[in-house]
Length: 457
Length: 102
Ligand SMILES: Cc1cc2nc3c(=O)[nH]c(=O)nc-3n(C[C@H](O)[C@H](O)[C@H](O)COP(=O)(O)OP(=O)(O)OC[C@H]3O[C@@H](n4cnc5c(N)ncnc54)[C@H](O)[C@@H]3O)c2cc1C
Ligand code: FES
Image (cartoon, rainbow over all chains, first blue to last red; front, side, top):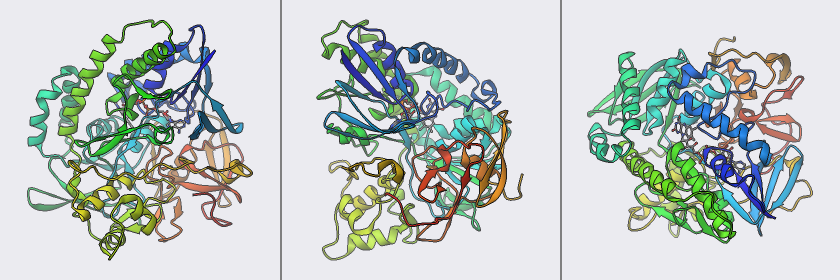
């Protein structure tokens, strides 16, 4: 009997499980931190919430229903462990923390389908109450039935920008403005790639049109200057067309795309690959999810692709696992490969239409907070980097300044720290890749009661 | 709902009512809702940052940034955004003791 451990019950993990369950010679364990399956996109409302998901999701609702049907078929056929965090991988074993406490699990094949989280950059005032990530704003609505505020500014560069704003509008929230940091010209240039999936492009444009129709101001090509308020967000200051502007609000949702949750892949010794277009690192795999020595990746952690792509890459990883075990494949990988390729072309288009504003960091004032956990400012890190014999690499800068050493483990300052080090050391992030903060176990903080007496690697 | 609440409920909760104590103050909650949604439907902050003294009220809302940590007992901290409320739950937004793990 071969044991396949899958971490992540999002569209990638569930699609992989669907191909693996019920096969002779294989047992599947699916571990997820969340209360319920679904991952980020199919974040389910908690059972006591009377959400009108149909109104909220519009056309996306049919997809959610299909996913739920798949889950109710697949989950009873495997060992499903919700509310369980995988906090380390070491010597072919997963270290977990769940309702029954600390545990470990050995595997013959490990599929890491841990998804992604919001990629953010510091903006003056970003630690203030009322400022949230774009994905967080969406999750609060879908899972808890709440809005982050009554008058929300949505800003940054992400395909979720218009979708989240529209969902807030549909749920009865006022959208004060959508401030998009990518210029319209860049979006026009992205159209040929976006035409890889004309239907999805049309949906995206329809979100913008619906917001315009609702009278929501939409401004492109902005530079975000500051989130301002007395102890909570009350105004967003930005520049557009060479002029300074301000818009009043009581909450801000912002983000610049997604970053892979790849700590487990790093700890499992997967090789990493640098994507010089997105200026970030991913686990390296052969296109079908293979990372080597029994480790596989699928979904957003493997490549930026979105929910449909996550499903295809989950199926491909499952087929790879079966092939590597020498078991018969239930399907050919070709249709999933072709579909994934179309999705990835489209995602490249999105990457141009919602561009990572690499230059934003160099323009940040010294007073702006860089590491929100440890309370380290941009200036403190800059001074460290500029000092005689000072660190010239992100992990050294972390050791010297504590930036990235806090409880989020660099998830929210890591991209900015890497850009700041590059700006200060003259690296362009293309010919010479940006630095990357190394993952360390436990990948999320554990309550002390959980690790008392347990060796921490 | 309190003046100055940060979060605004648009979909009703149908779960059973329960009482939760936050810093000794009793709040009416619905079983299963996140502790963070409860805190911010009743106020505008979760805690004060240990080093800078600034107010904080969560950030990622998905268990990744650790900005919303509260004390669930003198020895246990938890993320308010991923902790469902339970009847009789007590939480503290200020640390009674020293730091825990990273
Ligand atoms: C906040 C957010 C909102 C999004 N909204 C949309 C949208 O509206 N439309 C759209 O097309 N795309 C959206 N995306 C992108 C889309 O969610 C993804 O493309 C898709 O969900 C990826 O699926 P996945 O299976 O790779 O990962 P995910 O759906 O992210 O699932 C990963 C799962 O792994 C679990 N996990 C991670 N680490 C651990 C660990 N260490 N231990 C245990 N469990 C772990 C998580 O709890 C999660 O359930 C969103 C992404 C984010 C982050
Ligand atoms: S708000 Fe980020 S962990 Fe709770």
